[in-house]
Image (tube, rainbow, N blue to C red; front, side, top):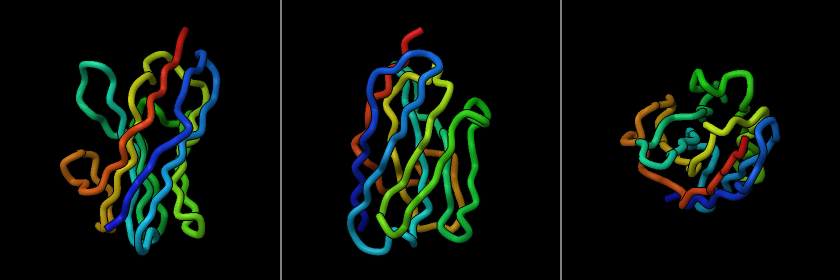
Length: 124
């Protein structure tokens, strides 16, 4: 099974950029569809972006379209989330997750493998 470790979170000001990484260990990273979720204080974990394993098609939540970009480097077993034009409402813990399905799901319950999360805090 795959193990996931996020990094790259931290403090930012509105308008800044951050790049999150999710390093995967274990076999066959390329066989997993990968996603990012985030959880703000007092809120449920919500879908942010995903990239599938089959053709690298991507999907984004409406509130990040045009600002965030998800990508993967299968040679490095790493998933990325480039976050530009950050807003205070982007604050939360960001989690990467994996599924061996060839399609993306927006529900957290569809994902078996999770990282521990990385905190992103955006001040105004």
